[in-house]
Image 1 (cartoon, rainbow, N blue to C red):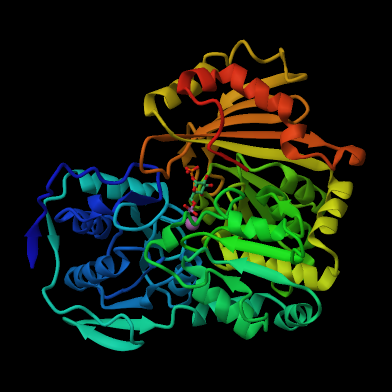
Image 2: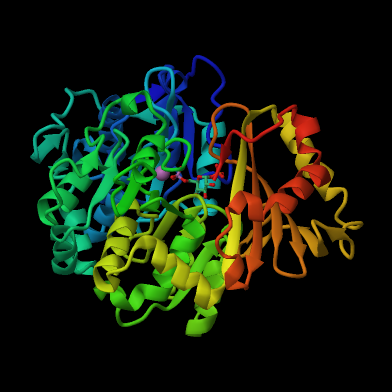
Length: 543
Ligand code: VG1
Ligand code: CO
């Protein structure tokens, strides 16, 4: 059945360059809104008639309704089969795993990641290609163009599918396989990590807590960490996924995961703590009274990859997003590996992984992953750390201290100014740009500015160019100040300020990052006039 795609208000579509559509639930609930987007996706991804689609989401409010709509549209548009996670659940990395394992044409993942959920909060949808990774810009741009002149969509009229029961069902000529949401992913984890060694670690006097933040990783973590690896019951906290994520903000950082942070910094703190986000692709790693920056986490993984069975034969290279600290670069250099610097967003790692150029990838925003799937992977990172801890039998802190002794320490911090007026945010970046020609050769924060630019990236595999990926002030000693506007928010603008300075002297490795970077932070404010232009005197979140 073809339906005229009339929206109750002009259809805004997906902003070009972003990997998915994120809007308030209320926006998605407008007549035809979701349908218009889904049809625009189907119209932009090539010939899938007779092929398989994967569908699942992070369980947030509107997940189930959206899945029913997508199933009926997939049937009308000619897919022959859809895999959908039981209860409508698939974490982002699990969806990537399922797409790859069953050779699906692609997948639709329903999530707004760590954004809050519920009737008044956010919903999202993104399309992943057959490699299991986020759609590249050529595809997202085609989808966006499609959203601008969509005139009808195709949908079958039929009863809803029971998503709670696994098995095969027929939906107007299309097969719907409701699959166990965890099994394929758990099997993949088992193939990469030394589960016996981790089981041994967890049965010693080692203690850990995993915070699923009432989001999608709850069932995954309970099965893998508690059932398969034998951690004590209750190791997984907030493990029941809720449609509103328990009213929380499932972003695993020091601000939003404060419940976990309080445990790791409290009396009788466990040896290890970790958290993941709404859709399960992010991770935060904590030791007893110790925080591992995501940038350092990537570097430690690269330096210790040979200890993990799935990577024991060596990694082919490392990639990090531009704002991520250069800690991984130092490890890559010492291992004689290539290290790539890409724009923010996991989609830029896909080509490098497909071409076999990199094995490990990471972003400063609590994202790490490898070529086992084509998304960042929160629980994978936790298991990677547990595997390292099981082999090295040291504390998290001493692993980091050893690492810094060997490679030096990249002091690093990100300051987020959320919900800023969009025009003011643009002015902040422009104000820095206006000084691109005057800053080089001058002193700032006691260092010589070497160069300033807008980061641009040419994909080494397909030659595609991505411009304006962050405003950078680069110093002679390798220090950096970077300003970027977030592409994932749903109200106002978020300015991200990234600060990095390198310290080779091991006697100076024990400082608090905010103290070590104090002069950089002050200089970043002065150069950009951020406080004056936005009317904010301090960041919303400091990591
Ligand atoms: C943020 C992070 C970025 C990450 C993206 C998606 O984007 O900075 O590193 O790839 O979220 O992560 P932005 O444009 O807001 O800075 V997730 O967990 O939302 O899929
Ligand atoms: Co996420």
